[in-house]
Image (tube, rainbow, N blue to C red; front, side):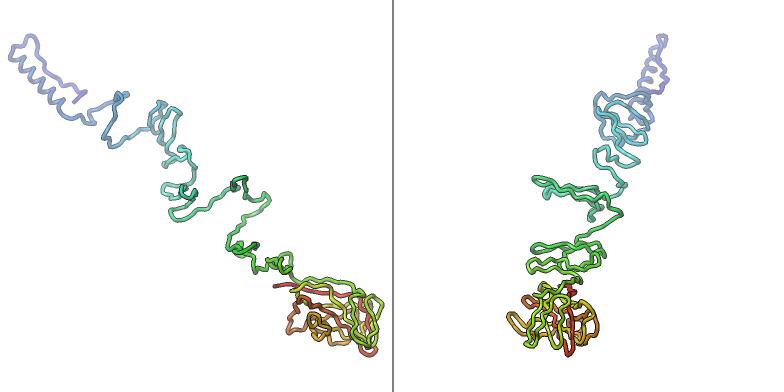
Amino acid sequence: MPGVDLNLDLPTPNDPFVTALAKIVAAFVAIEEDLEPRIGAGSLDIDTELSMNGAALTNVGGVRLQNGESAVVGTLYMDEEFHVVTTAGDVQLTLNGVLNVTALGTIGGDYGGFDPANVTFVTTSDDYFFRSDATTFADVQVRDIILNGAAGTFRLGVDAGLSGDQEIRFKSVPVTGHGMFAFNSADNSLVDAAGVVPVVGGMTFGANIDIGNNKILHGQQTITVPIALGDCVNLFANTTAQVGVPGVALGSNESTYIRLPPLRAGERIISVKVNFSDNSLNNTNVYLNVQAGVGASGWPTVLGNNLAVGFGSTSATVTPNLGPAVPYVVLVDRPVWVLLQTGVSGICKPCSLTVTTDVIA
């Protein structure tokens, strides 16, 4: 084979013609037998660079590289990782046995050899899709999201003062007109606030602010207002007293209506307390009345009364009596009044009213 001495017996000048001819024929036969077979891998012993003179190697079943390093442009080599040397420098194509995606100018990550996670862009919709596998969308963690508009941007982010991990999930949104959102901490959801009554600061209030009906839902609120002379009305012929300032008493067998402070339609009256200037409440009934109707002059509707004659008291509380603990809902153009009605030897000196109300619907 090539590279191995054939040990040919070549003719010499002293050999007879027949002997020389036989040696020549034997030499040609040995050379033919050595050159005629295909050269096998075992016949090659290359110990320096082999030039193909620019010709291509074709039908190659594979190329096996030994560990090495080279700076020659166009070289492929291995040094535990696969490299290619370009005019711009050495490019490492693998990292820890998998494709070195950073070398391709893409985003690196913990993909793993068989991880199906991918980011794709769909031209028809101008959308990017982040998936953890072919059918499951992945979570995306970023610091801020900047939304670009035609004439400006809108940044969504988290305040630096936030402590701990929080979560908000959209559950429903207002579907008509203008509305508000309410946060449900039970499932971290942001929902349409219609009909939701959250609790804030110990006071319940509705998520809806009904501007059209001049209504804001709220829990119990209490106000105390002084009684002025103009708040008192006397409707009985035998009544002569004009109460309204401390020290002016309602005497025996007299009565007066005292107007409650202005209440909004829809407010519920929880209770009304009449405060007296001293412990002058004596033999007096305290009633809560509502005007019979728009323009009506009578006062037939009794919402509640204490039915107990007080003796030496400084206040009397009245609650609407519409059934078991059912507050009275104020109607438009239907003012509510307190009626003080003394008996024989009765007396009282009203000075202020304390009214507790709420709005829940």
